[in-house]
Image 1 (cartoon, rainbow, N blue to C red):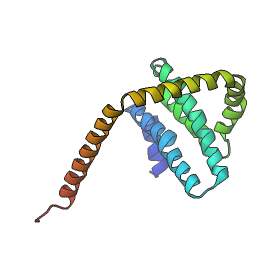
Image 2 (cartoon, helix red, strand yellow; image 1 turned 135 degrees about the vertical axis):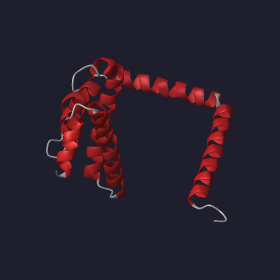
Image 3 (tube, helix red, strand yellow; image 1 turned 120 degrees about the horizontal axis):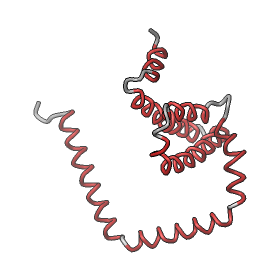
Length: 166
């Protein structure tokens, strides 16, 4: 049995199908686009960078909507399989679903409501700045803890990989 047939068999089998479909959604929806974005930036390819921006704009909107509706959506039979198909549709260069959704739906909506959204964004950034400014000492303490934790964890991993005296 060829590798694609095995993958398709796992995806469509009823045993652990949701787990496999969710993992596939994460891989196709996040890991692959992250790497594609990295390549577009590193190669300074403006065409690919625009494709990535369109994808992330649509994916972010979808992800935000899904956050509020996931409890209902997860009850739909084969929801994660449909989500996987949607994520593939968004990314396939021959179909360019993210560009279609952005051009036909997101862009007109955002243009129509741009003034109100700008006010909301300005307000949110202002509030975030106040919060960060008001909690500088706490944030510095957390930063120090994280650095200590990461330093200790890194040293422990190094000692496991390259034990001293062996």
